[in-house]
Amino acid sequence: MKKYIHISKNNIVREIINEFDDNFPGVGIEKRYNVDLLNKCRIIEDTENIPVIGYIYDEENNTYNQPIAIIPNPNIAIETARQEIYMQLEELDNTITRQVEQLYSDLDMIPEFTLMADAITQKIALRAQLLELGGE
Image 1 (cartoon, rainbow, N blue to C red):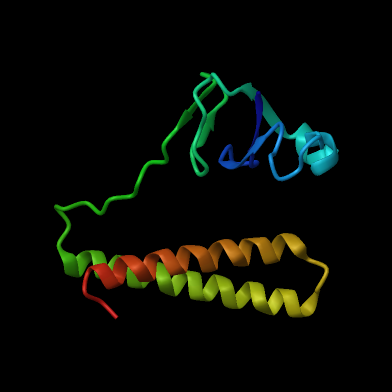
Image 2 (tube, one colour; image 1 turned 30 degrees about the horizontal axis):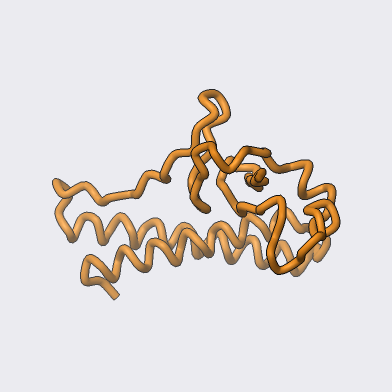
């Protein structure tokens, strides 16, 4: 049986779709999924190394790799790490504020919304790191 691997623009495995699904007996994948989505998928046999959602596809080597976790440098003092995170948070706050102001001025700017969402996601990750370091 084949598997369709949906890979994002950033080469991240987003979804693994079985060619056949027991929940839809006799219904092929072409009827369950949009053709545009299927055209963006890599098709592999289920005997191949099946990736995990979130893995990164290396097109050059045709492999799937586990994402690299960002681990704080243990040589940096906790206070220094906190200060760096606070500075990054301030920059992200400024970026988000500018992007929100821009969105209000032109609601048709979807790419700006995407950038803002990326900045918010980064901010959440930094807040989590700060909490791990004992910050607020």
